[in-house]
Length: 128
Image (cartoon, rainbow, N blue to C red; front, side):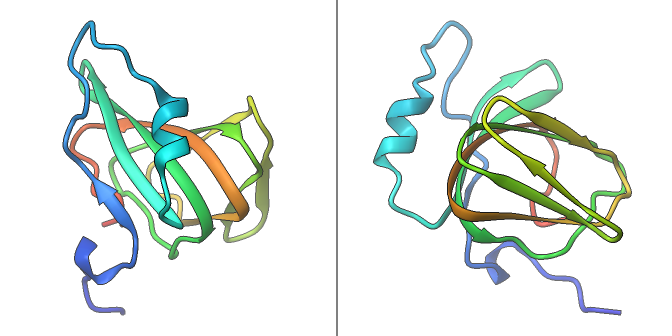
């Protein structure tokens, strides 16, 4: 079994602060255009017990799972891949997919891709 890792062990820019409050304009295009990182993840806003997060991605994330939390991925721009143990789900713009809790997965973007994620506010993005 691998030792437990913390978010600082991974080379991703992940910001869990909530960028926008209720009734504030969320300009996803402006944030995506300004992003220079290869793997950027920013919490945009909170809706009830969930958060909406922006991902500007290129490359691959590590294999992980969330034992108690589902994740929803929705592609705005580019191609996004979700590797599962037995198959790969390919998402194009305006397509989405839920990865249920407990399912081991790895996400990838062969080229720069912009996505939205909806997940419970207490998620640890790097997995359990």
